Length: 174
Picture 1 (tube, rainbow, N blue to C red):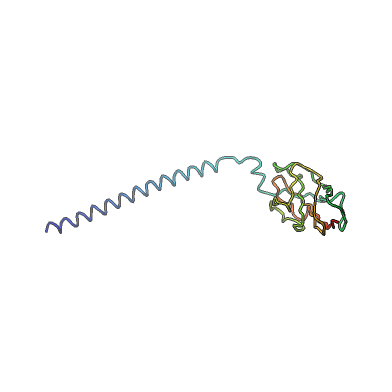
Picture 2 (cartoon, rainbow, N blue to C red; picture 1 turned 45 degrees about the horizontal axis):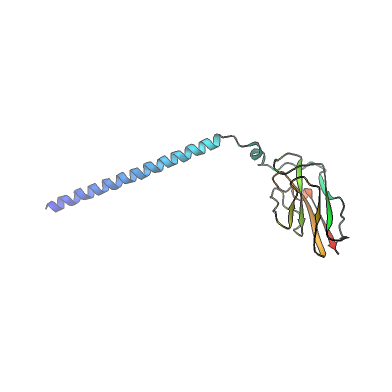
């Protein structure tokens, strides 16, 4: 009979122990949540850096702004290596880094389409050349054959201004 009385007591003790362990887990979970909330609240009250704040919106393209090849024409036959001179009107040529309204830098797309969609960062590879030091010319070496060259202007963090500031030509390398 004593075993029968002992069993309910053991069950009661086990339930109490489990309940306390749950409280400890909940308590430590609450502490973590509180710390996370405090960290989130602190981060939300911090002021972002100027460049990060300006990065939210792509600067507007001024009316009449355009990019162009200064020395190459569509359909031109050329010998490799050749010089590419890049022009811009209506915007200031500037280095990469800061986002400054009314400015940006050139990118040369080689056999990579006619423009990068507006707001998309221009990739950096052998088909997408970056000129983030505000260069306006470069020497290019291409194999013989027909090639599509696109001049694409982008903001300080390489986000494309889209087709509004792109121009495409085809050249034949002899």
